[in-house]
Image 1 (cartoon, rainbow, N blue to C red):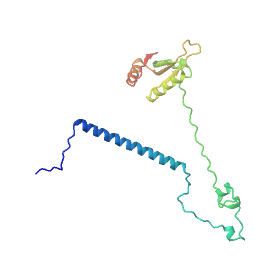
Image 2: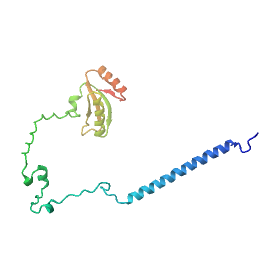
Image 3: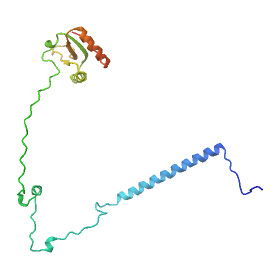
Length: 197
């Protein structure tokens, strides 16, 4: 006996892809409609004025002056009097004396990155990491070098110098070998110093 009410449905690959794509398109359309409805609901709610105490029950405060006509009204307090907590400006407790600041030692000013006299610092071996036309760039280079614990400074050009370059130098070192050792350490950090006197 065969079941004549039963029909088997067979879909080809193209039909399955079409069914999947139409399902995705339908889901996207439903999502976009939901977004549009949500925006319109939010816009409609934003237009209506909302009271700050919309959900709070209303409390009735009895008027004391109406209840007792013989009672004198409290004087109006200023802001200062309200802070002190007593009417008429008389504080209930005397205010605490202001703490006296303890004297602190003034820190010594930081040493300047430029030498007092270039001739005084030019004895020995030095490393030079760059020569810059602006002082701020040279000072930035010195700041990076001082983080690496090397004695860096800016050699300020003389007023009569033709090039007016701010040279960043490290040192002085007693001998060339000590300067070469620091130079290899700085090269590992990404700097390109050169040894000079």
